[in-house]
Image (tube, rainbow, N blue to C red; front, side, top):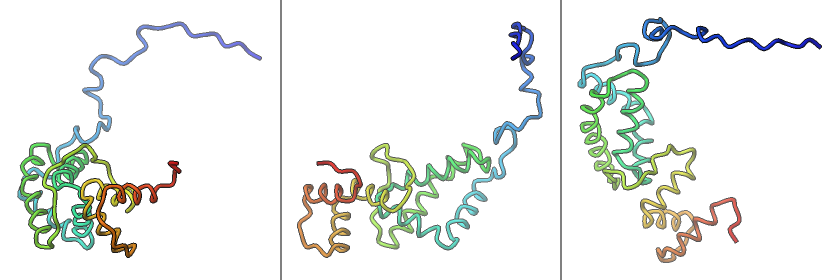
Amino acid sequence: MAIQKQQEYDPFNRPIPGSSLTSNGDAGFESSPPKHVDPDKVLDEAMTNLKKPGNMEKIMDLLFSGVSIEMIVNTWATTAVTKGDITPDVAELVKPTLALILLDEALERDIPVLMFDTDEAGKPFKDNTQALSVMGDARPELFDELLQKVNGKTSSNSDNEYQEDKQELGFISRG
């Protein structure tokens, strides 16, 4: 077995200061101009994407389950900026109009909406169970009504029954 000699430390074996500023490496969306800089065109493209089959329905389902319009619009803006589609200032200009469009659509469909976030629950849903959990926290009366329709129950909307139903949905024994 050969013994490897440990290399001596060389203080000059490192990149030249400032070399990252002049390299041609792919640094991400910050190193190239955004795709769109006109807020009107950004809004038109957002509306085109919302009108695609299924997109508006998914957003209305989120609003119905208790996700706020603010959370949806902020998620859209963050995604568009990080993909390099728009700049942060264009996102801030478009967000109020997009929020009003979503509010108008929800009101046309008689969906009760939350305009602003009330807590820090802004995590994406993995499945319908998680969406129902948010609905149970944000709109307990609506969640109880939905459970009654699904289960055929005619009980009252008390917090104890809500907690019992919520515990039944879990997979971990709590007792």
